[in-house]
Length: 101
Image (cartoon, rainbow, N blue to C red):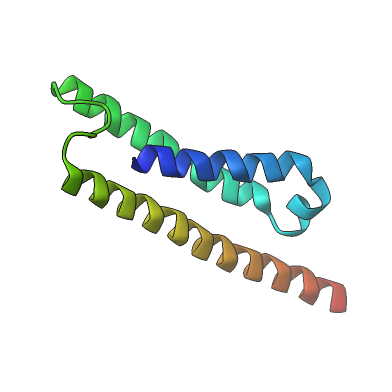
């Protein structure tokens, strides 16, 4: 489920990146999309590693493990938004400082 949640976030960020290029450039949506695609790739590798161990790609039978995966996916998306906000603040501050000089 973590892969599904981060994949959906990556797809949404990519759609915004290409649908609204002016907005994407101003708010550095490309950075957000890359973070989510990187997380999705990481969960994909984790899924293949569990397949190699003989387990399922995504755990759907255990409700407790599934709820933990959902919580982890939400935490990854929220943390990505926090890091993206910091990146936007730093880059916008640098551009405002350069414009004022």
